[in-house]
Amino acid sequence: MNKKWSPETIIQKRGESEKPESRKQITMKKLVLFLPIALLFSACSTVMLPSYTTVSKIYKLQKGMSMSEVDNVLDAPPFDMYVNAKDGVKMVEYKYVHHHMKVRGAYNSEANLNLGAPRYINPSDLVVVFDAQSGKMLYYYTSAGLADSKNALNQMNQILNKK
View (tube, rainbow, N blue to C red):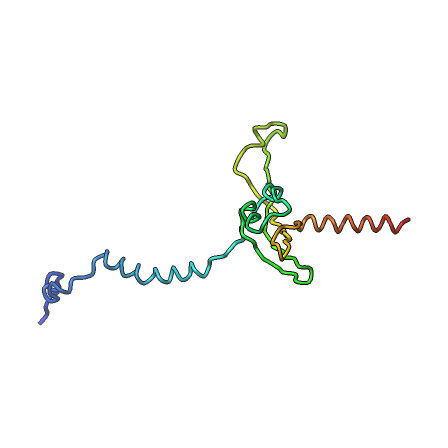
């Protein structure tokens, strides 16, 4: 007995309750399976970058400001904090960047100086020193300024040693 099977006889034998899954159902099942995996991988790849302030905002700092006033002026949260109990100071580190302008064409044209979005380069460190008791800013220095002062001190010592 050779019976020929056709799609109609298969559907009749399966019955109406066993229809093949629709495309929409298959897509939803894939989404339910892969969405948690995608969220897991995206959470693992998140990198926290520091918030940067700019040189122009650093120039607005004034002696005697509180830490919250400094945060508001710099518009960036502190990157790190150190307390020196011996000297009675709190040093708060911020990150800043330098404004960079790419000039195209003639350097003497004002129009060429104002092209494009602002660019920032050379991430650097800013350390603001506060009095630990009063919480008021005493002074600040930058990593670039510290390096320059060390060079100036070395040059001055070389000059004094030659005399």
